[in-house]
Length: 335
Image (cartoon, rainbow, N blue to C red; front, side, top):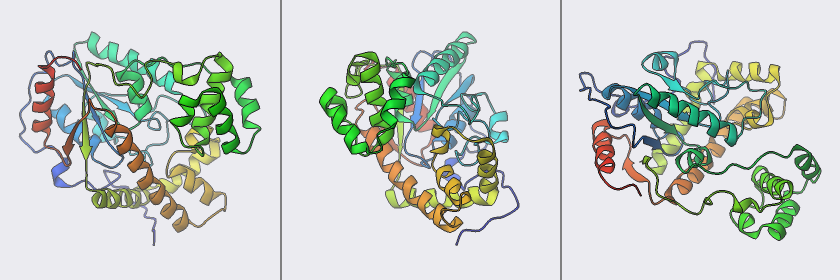
């Protein structure tokens, strides 16, 4: 049984002692690290943010850049596990709360803002550390992907077809490479690939180096790995803590302003919006959110495991060991 509570904890989910920086840790210079920025990635609830904060406390000049497609939205803090006010006061954070939830925020918009944030950080001799789990957003920055434009009229015509399988078959006829990369039932991805292919006159798969290629990059990518049962437990515990902290009230406020299609699809929000619409009970909504989030975590892990440039460490990771790994990678040729 899921319960609501009136008090708000200082953190929106439980973190083990191994996730936090220990008191009295040493602070080291950030000099020369900006040329090979660190990226902390991994599935949701793996402990990325806690590790990033611990590293930021150890290295002078670190500024954290969120790579999360939902943390960009204002007013969606609890459900996206955004850094708390206390955590934000500990050091600069970027690309959090940069868009209204009524907006459609795209990977192209994220790439533009990320480039600007990274330039600003380096311009004041700061050290950018990227942290997040949105794979496509990360690739857009790490590999400087060529992001295709938007074609609203084309998309409107495509959306009139309710059967995603039919749309996928159409895509397979126009761009079989792109069609083979996505599940036939993934409506958003199928629509986007068709929109670009028809609107630009170029196959969707022709843009950039292609997601199936992993060219050399100056970014040092470190991923967190957790036992599957432990990760599943953390996902459920985080939702329980979010509900106790007022997650339902946050979703009620979101419903009142009318979220964009993208914002309304955020895990947890989608299910609670259905509950508020009378489609299910609160318990049913949260149980569904847990199941979907666990499946999403599996997909994230598969996405990151395809990238041979990623270095995996067991979570909770020792921040000093990750810094040592970062430094070792900085001394090797870009790959």
